[in-house]
Every structure is written in structure tokens, then in C-alpha cells.
Image 1 (cartoon, helix red, strand yellow):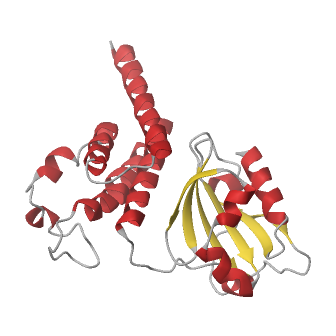
Image 2 (cartoon, one colour; image 1 turned 180 degrees about the horizontal axis):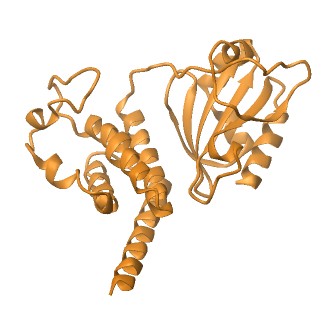
Length: 252
């Protein structure tokens, strides 16, 4: 993680439109581990915001990335080479100052930049199927990491909450009318497979890897999957199987 942050900072510093780089979450608190994601914020000149949010080539010139997905108008998910997943925003100093935010760490800032005020908003957007697919992969991958770390409840939230939510958007019936704010409302009565969700995709904390594997299989049958992402998710499934085997051996 440290080498990634150094490379990111060195690359961003060379871009004159970028005014500051900030870290948030577990990395900023020095509580990260091998399964942590990288939460960061890039502050750019106000005139450059449309350029930096429309095209992310500037990020790939700084560090090697395997996949990137838009979360909102100015927020994104990224899978870095090496398997670290990140969430980041791109905003102007003015935008940053208008909204409250958690305490973070300033990696660098240009002279005469005042970062003492408040935070960013995540703007809502209507996602395409490709964006739902990317969100599903990011949340499943992150959830498996939390599961391997031992955070089963948070893994449940990510896999059977956020990943499942994206999954429902990917398997919904074309032309059917869903709740515009909560797609999971009455989904069982709308979906042509009836009650399959309760049997195959909703279970206990110990079933999370199997449920994730079933969702991935269903999504794979409908959409092309990013090969690097699929490889890394598959490896985490294998890690989960090894952990399960060790637990069974110790229980005997």
C-alpha cells in the first residue's frame, strides 16, 4: 500500500492542475492491512474538473490500473495492479469546502491551498448495466477480502447488501416495473425464477463465499467479465476454501 501511495503522489504531483491529494479511511488512520481499500480524494483546479472527471487517463499515467468504474459525477472505484481496490473523488477546492467530511491525511498540497474547511458530496447518477457490473465486481471482491480478514458481518453487508443490490440490477427482467428507489422491494414476485433468491443467494455468514460464487456464475452467464478482476476474485474464493478447510480440521 505504501509504495502505491508514493507512486500515486509522485505521479499526481507532476500534473499542475492537481492541487492536493488526501487519504481517508483505514489507510489514513494507519489501520490498514492486506485486504484494505484505498480511499482518496484528488483536488484539482476548478476549471479542470470537467477534464479530470470525464477521462481518467491521467490516473493510468501515474499508476498501473486494471479496471475503473464511475460511482457518481465525481466519484469512482479503481482496481490497481497488484489487487488493491480504491474509492476516490475528483473535486475542486471550492466543492471540497462546501460539504462536511471525516478527518483525513494530506499527502501533498500546493502552496496557498487551504484545506481547513469541509467535504465532498457523492452526486447521484443513473447507472448503466456496465456500471452495475463493475459495482458488483468491486463490492464482491472487497467483501471477500473482509470475509478473509474475519469481518463476517461487514462482509455480509458488502456481499449480500451492496453486491446483491448490483446483482439484482443485472438480472432483472427487461420491461418489468421495479421500485425506482429500492430494486429489492417485491423482487421475488417480479423475477421469472420465482423464489430462487431466498434459496441460492441469501444465507448465513458462513455461506458468503458460496453465495458470492453463485452470483458471479449467474452474472458471468449474462455479461463479459473483466479477466483480471475475475482472476483475482477467483483467487479470493480459493483463499476462502483454504480457510474453511483449516477451520474444519481444527474442529475435529
